Image 1 (cartoon, rainbow, N blue to C red):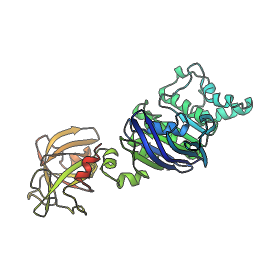
Image 2: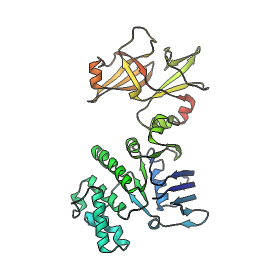
Image 3: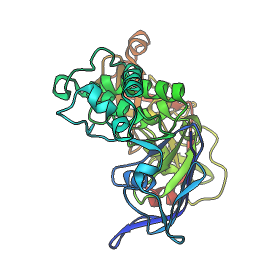
Image 4: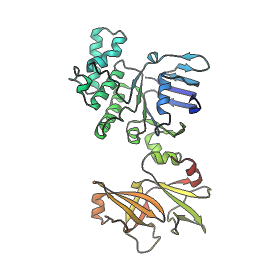
Length: 367
């Protein structure tokens, strides 16, 4: 197993600076995910750690060994950094069988034939490909090809695994299946995993800890999936971690009013000083009901602008004084409680959980 340390890492391509004075610590034996939008520099960071590219400044250490130091002239090549890499596009050799693909790094390393065969078959079984050793990649599904790529990277039992969007080319069912398998394998071998993705669900499932990056390559928050989801550091993190609603408010006569209307917020407001506040919440945080007889009775009044039947769920777009928010409700519950709304109908909404953000800061951190 190995840890990873990045200290003051900077990388630019011409005038475009991807990372600037970046610091990151990944602990030994954990599954750590870099999560962020496309183009934010996740893959660049992985390539700098792997040694496929060199930082312009800073240090990179793996397992206590400095593998790159811009000031000290250290640059250990990728094949001596003790890592395995799995790419998005599988990169399996089409003319080789499953066995030959997985055995290739061991063959290059000079393993004796008996040990090579034992380790190769053991690793093929580890990724649930036993019995398919003699098949060519053209005879495999996309998910099976990705398992071959994973097995090939694991064959030499590296101390560190770097996974670059390995599931993005798979369909939804295979992605779900593979993310659980990757986590299970990581647990069995105790290998340190650095996983790069823009998929929030994958990150939440497999991560021990994760770093959320913004479009400028900055790390906005590091923590466990639960910490980041429940206690986002800022509005960017909240918005990137799933479908988000933002309800602007304004202060008027000592009251906090919702949207552009006159409805007062009937819940405790934020603490702190700001010219304006925005309430943030998930669609699942909204409790929807039929209109209340008295306005302001612990709820806000709204109008259904869109009603979408999604099978197990009903998805509503609600207009609250000019602000559009989304709410979801289990279909069977909606039917049993008479909450199947039509477009144009009035409703009442309340919230299970609210996060408050400075409206001025919200504009600066827009996704």
